[in-house]
Image (cartoon, rainbow, N blue to C red; front, side):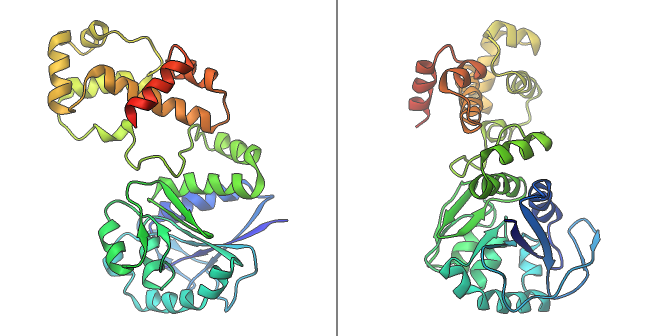
Length: 305
Protein backbone atom coordinates (compact mmCIF):
# COMPACT_ATOMS: atom_id res chain seq x y z
CA UNK A 1 0.00 0.00 0.00
CA UNK A 2 1.38 3.41 -0.99
CA UNK A 3 2.04 6.13 1.56
CA UNK A 4 0.60 9.55 0.76
CA UNK A 5 3.11 12.38 1.22
CA UNK A 6 1.83 15.95 1.42
CA UNK A 7 4.33 18.79 0.92
CA UNK A 8 3.19 22.14 2.30
CA UNK A 9 4.50 24.74 -0.16
CA UNK A 10 4.80 28.40 0.84
CA UNK A 11 6.34 31.46 -0.82
CA UNK A 12 10.10 31.48 -0.31
CA UNK A 13 10.32 27.70 0.10
CA UNK A 14 13.97 26.63 0.21
CA UNK A 15 14.03 24.59 -2.96
CA UNK A 16 16.39 21.82 -1.85
CA UNK A 17 14.54 21.42 1.47
CA UNK A 18 11.51 20.32 -0.53
CA UNK A 19 12.96 18.89 -3.74
CA UNK A 20 15.57 16.75 -1.92
CA UNK A 21 12.99 14.76 0.08
CA UNK A 22 10.53 14.79 -2.85
CA UNK A 23 13.10 13.30 -5.25
CA UNK A 24 14.20 10.77 -2.63
CA UNK A 25 10.68 9.56 -1.92
CA UNK A 26 9.74 9.88 -5.58
CA UNK A 27 12.45 7.40 -6.56
CA UNK A 28 10.56 4.89 -4.40
CA UNK A 29 7.56 5.50 -6.65
CA UNK A 30 5.88 2.18 -5.90
CA UNK A 31 5.82 3.06 -2.20
CA UNK A 32 4.83 6.76 -2.12
CA UNK A 33 2.37 9.12 -3.79
CA UNK A 34 3.46 12.77 -3.64
CA UNK A 35 1.10 15.74 -3.30
CA UNK A 36 1.83 19.47 -3.13
CA UNK A 37 -0.56 21.72 -1.22
CA UNK A 38 -0.60 25.30 0.00
CA UNK A 39 -2.59 28.52 0.33
CA UNK A 40 -1.73 29.54 -3.24
CA UNK A 41 -1.57 27.53 -6.49
CA UNK A 42 1.74 29.10 -7.51
CA UNK A 43 4.71 30.37 -5.47
CA UNK A 44 8.25 31.61 -6.02
CA UNK A 45 11.01 29.58 -4.34
CA UNK A 46 14.39 30.49 -2.88
CA UNK A 47 16.13 30.17 -6.25
CA UNK A 48 13.61 32.29 -8.14
CA UNK A 49 11.96 29.27 -9.73
CA UNK A 50 8.17 29.44 -9.72
CA UNK A 51 6.36 26.29 -8.63
CA UNK A 52 2.84 25.71 -9.87
CA UNK A 53 0.20 23.02 -9.72
CA UNK A 54 -0.10 23.39 -5.94
CA UNK A 55 -3.38 22.03 -4.63
CA UNK A 56 -5.53 23.74 -1.97
CA UNK A 57 -5.20 22.89 1.71
CA UNK A 58 -7.56 19.97 2.43
CA UNK A 59 -9.53 20.06 5.65
CA UNK A 60 -8.26 16.59 6.59
CA UNK A 61 -5.45 14.34 5.39
CA UNK A 62 -5.88 10.57 4.89
CA UNK A 63 -4.70 8.37 7.72
CA UNK A 64 -1.11 7.14 7.57
CA UNK A 65 -0.05 10.20 5.56
CA UNK A 66 3.25 12.04 5.87
CA UNK A 67 2.97 15.84 6.10
CA UNK A 68 6.22 17.59 5.13
CA UNK A 69 7.05 21.16 6.20
CA UNK A 70 10.04 22.51 4.29
CA UNK A 71 12.19 25.42 5.37
CA UNK A 72 12.19 28.83 3.70
CA UNK A 73 15.03 31.05 2.57
CA UNK A 74 14.26 33.71 5.20
CA UNK A 75 12.13 32.41 8.05
CA UNK A 76 11.99 35.85 9.70
CA UNK A 77 10.09 37.03 6.63
CA UNK A 78 8.33 34.14 4.94
CA UNK A 79 6.76 32.64 8.05
CA UNK A 80 4.96 35.92 8.69
CA UNK A 81 3.32 36.36 5.29
CA UNK A 82 -0.48 36.11 4.95
CA UNK A 83 0.03 32.72 3.29
CA UNK A 84 2.10 31.50 6.25
CA UNK A 85 -0.52 32.73 8.72
CA UNK A 86 -3.17 30.77 6.83
CA UNK A 87 -0.88 27.73 6.81
CA UNK A 88 -0.29 28.01 10.58
CA UNK A 89 -4.03 28.04 11.23
CA UNK A 90 -4.47 25.01 9.00
CA UNK A 91 -1.61 23.19 10.74
CA UNK A 92 -3.22 23.90 14.10
CA UNK A 93 -6.30 22.05 12.88
CA UNK A 94 -4.12 19.00 12.09
CA UNK A 95 -2.78 18.78 15.65
CA UNK A 96 -5.33 16.25 16.87
CA UNK A 97 -4.62 13.90 13.96
CA UNK A 98 -0.87 14.20 14.57
CA UNK A 99 -1.29 13.48 18.28
CA UNK A 100 -3.48 10.45 17.52
CA UNK A 101 -0.81 9.15 15.17
CA UNK A 102 -3.12 9.30 12.15
CA UNK A 103 -0.51 11.31 10.28
CA UNK A 104 3.22 11.79 10.78
CA UNK A 105 4.77 15.25 10.67
CA UNK A 106 8.13 15.72 8.91
CA UNK A 107 9.96 19.04 9.31
CA UNK A 108 13.02 19.96 7.27
CA UNK A 109 15.30 22.79 8.44
CA UNK A 110 13.28 25.83 9.57
CA UNK A 111 10.09 23.87 8.91
CA UNK A 112 10.45 23.03 12.61
CA UNK A 113 10.00 26.72 13.37
CA UNK A 114 6.73 26.78 11.40
CA UNK A 115 5.57 23.72 13.32
CA UNK A 116 6.46 25.35 16.63
CA UNK A 117 4.62 28.56 15.76
CA UNK A 118 1.60 26.44 14.82
CA UNK A 119 1.47 24.81 18.25
CA UNK A 120 2.67 21.38 17.09
CA UNK A 121 5.87 21.00 19.13
CA UNK A 122 4.64 21.55 22.70
CA UNK A 123 6.51 18.99 24.84
CA UNK A 124 8.05 17.41 21.73
CA UNK A 125 11.69 16.40 21.38
CA UNK A 126 12.93 18.09 18.21
CA UNK A 127 15.79 19.76 16.35
CA UNK A 128 16.44 22.16 13.48
CA UNK A 129 19.28 23.84 11.59
CA UNK A 130 21.95 25.08 14.01
CA UNK A 131 21.35 28.70 12.97
CA UNK A 132 17.66 28.46 13.98
CA UNK A 133 18.02 26.63 17.32
CA UNK A 134 17.70 29.77 19.45
CA UNK A 135 14.60 30.93 17.59
CA UNK A 136 13.03 27.48 17.86
CA UNK A 137 13.47 27.54 21.63
CA UNK A 138 11.88 30.99 21.76
CA UNK A 139 8.97 29.99 19.51
CA UNK A 140 8.08 26.99 21.69
CA UNK A 141 9.65 27.18 25.16
CA UNK A 142 8.09 23.83 26.07
CA UNK A 143 9.76 21.98 23.21
CA UNK A 144 12.67 19.68 24.08
CA UNK A 145 15.21 21.01 21.60
CA UNK A 146 18.19 18.82 20.77
CA UNK A 147 21.19 20.62 19.31
CA UNK A 148 23.66 19.19 16.82
CA UNK A 149 21.42 16.36 15.61
CA UNK A 150 20.72 15.35 12.01
CA UNK A 151 17.13 14.38 12.79
CA UNK A 152 14.97 13.54 15.79
CA UNK A 153 11.72 11.58 16.12
CA UNK A 154 9.19 11.91 18.91
CA UNK A 155 5.77 10.24 18.72
CA UNK A 156 5.47 10.49 14.97
CA UNK A 157 6.93 13.98 14.67
CA UNK A 158 10.20 14.07 12.72
CA UNK A 159 12.42 17.15 12.67
CA UNK A 160 15.72 17.55 10.85
CA UNK A 161 18.67 19.89 10.66
CA UNK A 162 18.23 21.23 7.18
CA UNK A 163 18.81 20.94 3.44
CA UNK A 164 20.67 17.64 2.82
CA UNK A 165 19.52 16.22 6.18
CA UNK A 166 16.06 16.12 4.61
CA UNK A 167 17.47 13.50 2.23
CA UNK A 168 18.94 11.55 5.16
CA UNK A 169 15.59 11.63 6.93
CA UNK A 170 13.71 10.61 3.77
CA UNK A 171 15.96 7.58 3.33
CA UNK A 172 15.38 6.71 6.98
CA UNK A 173 11.60 6.97 6.50
CA UNK A 174 11.77 4.70 3.44
CA UNK A 175 13.66 2.21 5.59
CA UNK A 176 11.15 2.52 8.45
CA UNK A 177 8.01 2.27 6.30
CA UNK A 178 9.07 0.00 3.45
CA UNK A 179 12.26 -1.77 4.47
CA UNK A 180 16.06 -1.41 4.22
CA UNK A 181 16.42 -2.86 0.72
CA UNK A 182 14.27 -0.15 -0.86
CA UNK A 183 16.16 2.53 1.10
CA UNK A 184 19.49 1.11 -0.09
CA UNK A 185 18.26 0.93 -3.70
CA UNK A 186 17.20 4.59 -3.60
CA UNK A 187 20.46 5.66 -1.94
CA UNK A 188 22.44 3.90 -4.67
CA UNK A 189 20.33 5.48 -7.40
CA UNK A 190 21.05 8.89 -5.88
CA UNK A 191 24.74 8.04 -5.36
CA UNK A 192 24.23 8.79 -1.66
CA UNK A 193 26.48 6.05 -0.40
CA UNK A 194 26.72 7.16 3.21
CA UNK A 195 23.42 7.78 4.97
CA UNK A 196 23.63 9.76 8.19
CA UNK A 197 21.60 8.68 11.19
CA UNK A 198 19.74 10.90 13.62
CA UNK A 199 22.56 10.60 16.12
CA UNK A 200 25.19 11.93 13.74
CA UNK A 201 26.46 15.46 14.38
CA UNK A 202 25.30 18.20 12.01
CA UNK A 203 28.94 19.10 11.37
CA UNK A 204 30.80 15.93 10.38
CA UNK A 205 34.60 15.61 10.47
CA UNK A 206 34.55 16.46 6.76
CA UNK A 207 33.19 19.94 7.63
CA UNK A 208 33.94 20.58 11.28
CA UNK A 209 37.63 21.47 10.88
CA UNK A 210 37.39 23.49 7.67
CA UNK A 211 36.90 26.95 9.17
CA UNK A 212 40.44 28.17 8.50
CA UNK A 213 42.39 29.73 5.63
CA UNK A 214 45.68 27.85 5.53
CA UNK A 215 46.19 26.30 2.06
CA UNK A 216 48.63 23.58 3.12
CA UNK A 217 46.27 22.32 5.83
CA UNK A 218 43.35 22.33 3.37
CA UNK A 219 45.43 20.34 0.90
CA UNK A 220 46.33 17.82 3.59
CA UNK A 221 42.67 17.56 4.61
CA UNK A 222 41.68 17.00 0.99
CA UNK A 223 44.17 14.13 0.75
CA UNK A 224 43.01 12.46 3.95
CA UNK A 225 39.26 12.93 3.43
CA UNK A 226 39.55 11.66 -0.14
CA UNK A 227 41.01 8.36 1.00
CA UNK A 228 40.90 7.96 4.82
CA UNK A 229 41.30 4.18 4.53
CA UNK A 230 44.78 4.50 3.01
CA UNK A 231 47.89 3.85 5.11
CA UNK A 232 48.92 7.46 5.48
CA UNK A 233 52.26 8.36 7.06
CA UNK A 234 53.02 11.86 8.26
CA UNK A 235 56.14 12.31 6.07
CA UNK A 236 54.15 11.32 2.98
CA UNK A 237 51.32 13.75 3.76
CA UNK A 238 53.78 16.55 4.47
CA UNK A 239 55.69 15.92 1.24
CA UNK A 240 52.45 16.03 -0.76
CA UNK A 241 51.63 19.51 0.59
CA UNK A 242 55.26 20.77 0.43
CA UNK A 243 55.97 21.33 4.13
CA UNK A 244 58.03 19.42 6.66
CA UNK A 245 56.33 16.80 8.90
CA UNK A 246 57.12 18.86 11.99
CA UNK A 247 55.66 22.02 10.44
CA UNK A 248 52.51 20.19 9.30
CA UNK A 249 51.96 18.92 12.84
CA UNK A 250 52.28 22.46 14.18
CA UNK A 251 49.86 23.76 11.53
CA UNK A 252 47.21 21.17 12.42
CA UNK A 253 47.44 22.04 16.12
CA UNK A 254 47.38 25.76 15.37
CA UNK A 255 44.48 25.80 12.90
CA UNK A 256 42.46 22.70 13.83
CA UNK A 257 43.35 22.13 17.46
CA UNK A 258 44.02 18.42 16.90
CA UNK A 259 46.85 16.28 15.55
CA UNK A 260 47.05 14.87 12.03
CA UNK A 261 46.62 11.39 13.47
CA UNK A 262 43.49 12.34 15.45
CA UNK A 263 41.97 14.06 12.43
CA UNK A 264 42.52 10.96 10.30
CA UNK A 265 41.04 8.76 13.02
CA UNK A 266 37.88 10.89 13.12
CA UNK A 267 37.48 10.53 9.35
CA UNK A 268 37.94 6.77 9.58
CA UNK A 269 35.50 6.50 12.47
CA UNK A 270 32.83 8.44 10.57
CA UNK A 271 33.33 6.23 7.52
CA UNK A 272 33.14 3.03 9.58
CA UNK A 273 29.94 4.16 11.29
CA UNK A 274 28.34 4.90 7.93
CA UNK A 275 29.28 1.47 6.60
CA UNK A 276 27.77 -0.14 9.69
CA UNK A 277 24.55 1.79 9.03
CA UNK A 278 24.55 0.33 5.52
CA UNK A 279 24.46 -3.13 7.05
CA UNK A 280 28.10 -4.14 6.70
CA UNK A 281 29.57 -6.35 9.39
CA UNK A 282 31.87 -4.77 11.97
CA UNK A 283 34.99 -6.49 10.62
CA UNK A 284 34.27 -5.49 7.02
CA UNK A 285 33.40 -1.92 8.05
CA UNK A 286 36.55 -1.63 10.16
CA UNK A 287 38.92 -2.71 7.41
CA UNK A 288 37.12 -0.69 4.72
CA UNK A 289 37.54 2.47 6.82
CA UNK A 290 41.26 1.87 7.40
CA UNK A 291 41.24 0.28 10.86
CA UNK A 292 43.39 -2.79 11.33
CA UNK A 293 40.71 -4.61 13.31
CA UNK A 294 37.29 -4.21 14.98
CA UNK A 295 39.18 -3.76 18.24
CA UNK A 296 40.98 -0.72 16.87
CA UNK A 297 37.59 0.68 15.76
CA UNK A 298 36.20 0.05 19.25
CA UNK A 299 39.10 1.96 20.82
CA UNK A 300 38.57 4.86 18.43
CA UNK A 301 34.92 4.94 19.48
CA UNK A 302 35.95 5.07 23.13
CA UNK A 303 38.31 7.97 22.49
CA UNK A 304 35.59 9.86 20.64
CA UNK A 305 32.96 9.40 23.37
